[in-house]
Length: 410
Image (cartoon, rainbow, N blue to C red; front, top):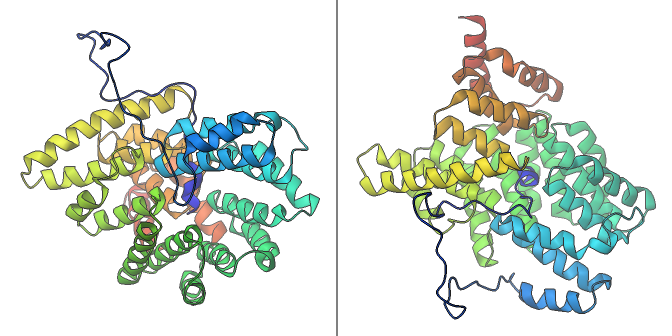
């Protein structure tokens, strides 16, 4: 999903955990070195060596490009999958010999651009992507798709379309179809884009799981824009089935499906679906929203869970702000608006986020936050963006109508 660009976390500053001891209690100190404080699992991606094994191979030859790339790619994927900031730092460390070199190997440039995008450092990412495109190397086609995703997340479908078109003949059919469907969906042609994407899905049963998950996420979003919730649900469920068959985790599609279910009033299913994912903050936020909904019916366990998770997220989001992490601004705004009930803080987070990410999800949340804070002028930019793109979205239209009513006093 396009929103995946904002799901990476910076590292090297340490994490604040909700389980830290309070000020009244001294930190736990083991009696001796033989005491086991925690058993740390060896992270592993399906079909790959463990991260520890890949790291050992890289450490033995740190300037060997294939070894560095294998370790860095695995660490980057683990960072995305687990929303764990440490892995992103591991990936950058593996690329250290080439990190500041303008003329790094093409495959290094592509991964380096992805790491910059994960931190929402768009300028260096665009330099790397443009260098690959200008060089005419095979990696340039992937660079065009990556840049298209960036343009989509910035709310610029016309620029994204140029990259999708240029890459279409050189990438997989489903990748090309998903790219163009996302573009057309932002240009007001969601229904036609969805029809074309569904045909591509039918013809691409052998596509990699990561590509199918992207396609399913785009298809579900397009279906929701035209009000076809049953169609959206089919794509969400097909995506989750593929995710589970691949023995992986995709926070993007899980969070999007959870948002859909919460809007449908199915908090119980959200709780069941997300309870196994306590480490991913974006998913823990949706679990907390589900627990708050269930608690309103007198469920004491749900209320206790929501209280505990709210404390954890408060600490995590505060830490992100302290270190200037922009990757979870939208989630922070949702947390302030629907968990902490602080519309002014939510509006501040979304105003900052809008400078980096502009899609219908962001537009709806900014309009909601501006209305809740009774500052409708703070969302004027959303209207200009809607007109400029031509996007049509039933949910966005309803939110815009409510915002306009407040703004005009009618």
